[in-house]
Length: 397
Image 1: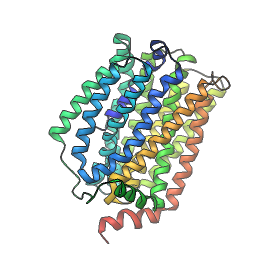
Image 2 (image 1 turned 180 degrees about the vertical axis):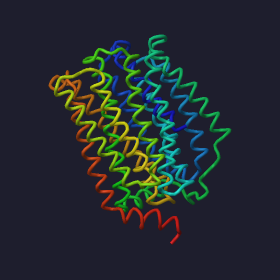
Image 3 (image 1 turned 30 degrees about the vertical axis):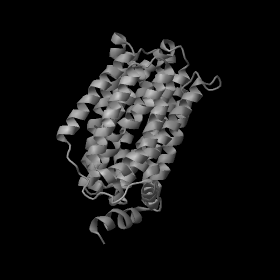
Image 4 (image 1 turned 180 degrees about the horizontal axis):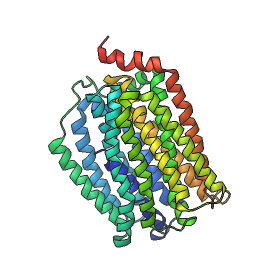
């Protein structure tokens, strides 16, 4: 259930350049199928989290996944780019329930540092889907066209609904007594008073911007500057997902031992080094695919270390509001990621900055530096994050 949304986001990426001619449209319009997908994820998380706090995790997930299947059918039969964009928005809004509720369910069951380890293992497994997604998407694009990716998503969506119906138990045993706009706003207002929540959320958001910048720019860079086919792009993308799996494995293995703060800062350092290496390659006009995907392995590794720990920190500030915290933190993360993706796409499409890899490197570098500074903010608020947040509410004092 955690993998369905990342897979839906990534599997059609190798087909994006070809969609320009299929729908007789521009690269910027096709790029909206990704960017607005991310925006939809961002906004819907604001509702899914509080809904699960009130109704429970299980019913919200089942309803959302059923809607995801219908949205995937609409994508499959979209007659034009506008219809496809609209269906992708619905697909992103419904599919993100898996992302929100997977980490919320983990936090229902474990303490902060333990949940960071568990989230690391969950996202490590989740990363298998986007690892093989672009490779499969590129391959089946060559067989059945761009619609094949959505055929697969329909099938997998149905399987997730069936699996969740039979095997997912309710984990929210401390449900909110009320639900409505006022209660939702109140939950978010409570969270915004915690500086530690903002520190963890900004760290995860800027770290995500590094990755989403790559998603927004890579399909067109590899096509125009590296002359890769969709299937070749999908194969190289396995390095990106492989780095993310490695980083999440390290989080699962070491977060409980070393704590979220040390893991966050280690991941941020890896991110700075990776983006610097990519910039050096482009400065030397080295446009071999490994000049892009090699550094992205380590950038994704840094994401795998930073994100589970930052997310675990954010949802642990107030465990009684874990669903709302997951929704608000995830919304900001995806919203900022969408903005970064659209910025890179717009810069690449412009005549002034297009034709090079510098728009991608620039946005990634800015995001990486801001993630590092936000990580320092987390360290500065270590006492609040520990004493005023998770510990206080878990002990009931």
